[in-house]
Length: 460
Image (cartoon, rainbow, N blue to C red; front, side, top):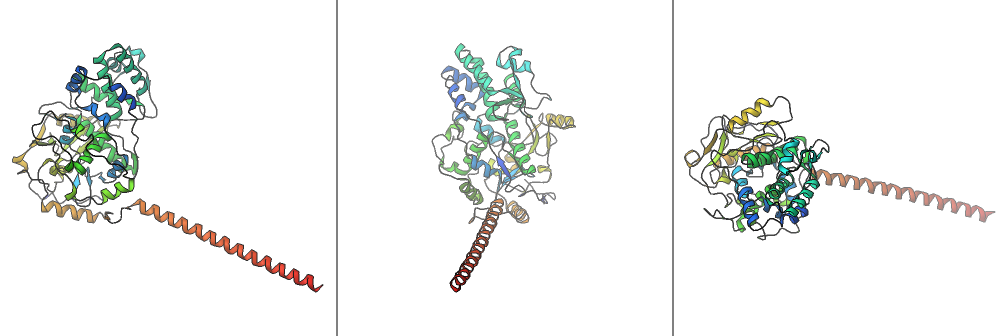
């Protein structure tokens, strides 16, 4: 990628703004779904995978909450990537597509928010129950159907051996609980919207999953707090692949039968890692310790832009946000260069906001013209970064005053918290000393009075 006069990006000051933000993660228990999944076997399993891919394997993914919490601290809300002490990374469409075995193919439709959420009649059609039996629930601002109701329906379907409907409803559960989670115990209308478009219009849902991830991380950093409410399982696998992928036997070129999701199972175990251990791990990360190109990805062309956008607008059931492939080239086996200003122009809106109809339509039209780039545009395949990029990133990080201390994993708010605890401790000690001094003064006074009274008594 040639450098032009617009590549000298001035940083907005947002880069480390989110350090120490208050995050929470709530992952729903999956025991009931795992038990129900045992009905999917033999011919039923073959048909399931043919239609829905490898999403069933998401049930067996171990979530490392502390790792995700700390990884999320490094999100750059303005550049839409994770920025560490000497490198940047971001989940890509290609990587997520390969993990799920749902790659985006040329002329393939993707999920685009239709402008409305599913009706009670649509939900009844998916579940194959009478419309009047659909019970809508709305805790807080989330509207959908109860997970408990759907699981009860699955048990009925299994008893009837209605396996086609069973597999469809089971997949809806995975969409609502793992891929597009909302409130605990609810399969919300946004998740149902994506499932509806996939089931009846055969769209690819990977851009929607990535949109939810980018929206969640960016919202949390903009607010300074929040719940990491996206497909944690995929983000976890993506992270572990780059951290520990050098030790895992992933699929090789043209090995179309392999399953990246199952490559993780039983290959390594991360036990006993505390939050502070993960904090130290991420604070010490350097580009040399990362597996840059996952072995799942070997194709030459990458999705680089859509329509008139210089980057890729990702649309999910909640909103739309830009994705910058120019900052993830090294992960896709190309040299990482400095992005131009156009390539990182920000796009962000939620469907529930007023005045987004035109923006929504622009994004839909852009996805009708997907722009690919390969060796001709990006140069020879080499997994490294240019000297210009290294200089640009270094100057940007130094200007943002990052808190990277490899020898001391206590960063940001941790130091503030410890300082606060020390102040409180000193105050307690000071109060104790004052109490001891007062007690000693009372003892001396009492002793003096006792001695005076004794002398007076003896004199009389």
